[in-house]
Length: 203
Length: 203
DNA sequence: TGTACATCAGTGAACGCGCGTTCACTGATGTAC
DNA sequence: TGTACATCAGTGAACGCGCGTTCACTGATGTAC
Image 1 (cartoon, each protein chain N blue to C red):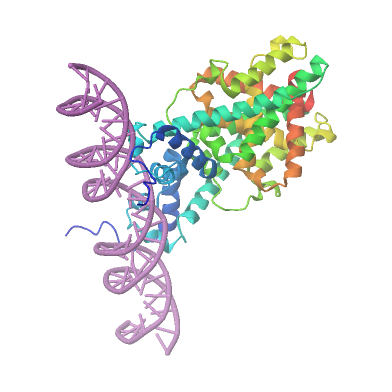
Image 2 (tube, each protein chain N blue to C red):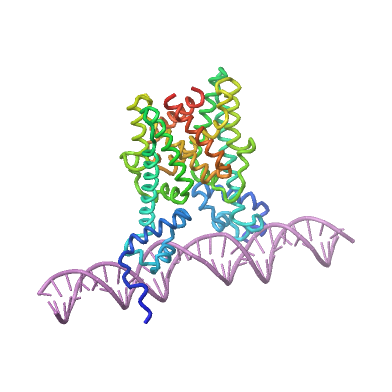
């Protein structure tokens, strides 16, 4: 008389597996996304995942895409929230917020951040297209040119400079020697780093 | 009548194990430093290492120290090779060479670079002391203050700005989206990144 | 100079673990007639 | 409206792998007397 708690057919397994894998990635990073554990948490036998993904790498790729999308959204939200009237000041602040959002995400979600940049084998379309976090950054930089803050001849390579700086800062903070620095000091350091980039590009 | 090719006592096993582990790290990174493989390559039973190291982590720490030392040496050599008479120009070029050496090392030795920053649990003394790559960078920055190129009030945080930038550039190149960019273009991008830092600090 | 003995630095076998993946199978669902 | 059947989406068992670590043991070395 006990009701069948679990029907034989799950009916919605694929998205559940991805969600579960994302949760696992959040807490343990790429190596923690273990097929058997994902299945366990989804309450399904350990090989059921093979009905929906070729192999572990395919699942990880999907998780990585999700992580990238989350990072992009976090950046865009912070950019959109900038409320400054003066066009030049607004564009400059938007660039700073881009950087802060990037680092914030890495600190808040170290597992997802690591997964986002753990390319199993996938191509990296970000540089060619305007998609993803890289696209967001480029849009903000274009804006800086439009308002006259960034000289057009300095526009080339500016994306890489910005990206390298915040990415390095994030890495040093999440996995490196800056991890042990108090967060108040870290925030100050990030501001000074952003200031150097600002002056380097537009000063 | 076959001569004993391997004496029972190796006599020199500890350094050989470290050397072997470093070689393994070079080609495969931190995860490749597998105790059993290290022993195999050293021609010794897989548990002989326990006479010299508490566990795998202890061996890895030693490898990490070696990697850091190699990175530091590579940086110092490039810095010392700068032959420019004008003090300000020399100091500026030394800073650039510091960055180039850092990125070069990461590209040439991705395995060691990864191991150097994979802290198993060890403390990070680099920030407090003047030792290691971080110390080398700080010495060069002090030099820039001495010759009057870097304003003293901008000295604080300059180390983190420089480090974050080259570290991020290295990461994006070794593990990230810049990996697929032709190396000629990458070199140009690195120069433009270094230029941004230079202007940001001293412009 | 010789010998007993402690210590050092190796050995092979085994434990326990967990993984990705494949196999043959089965219950549930949907569709053609 | 009912039924045969193909297909879908699960299942449990097993394979093969390799790891870190521990155990009891042994050959070699060094030292005290």
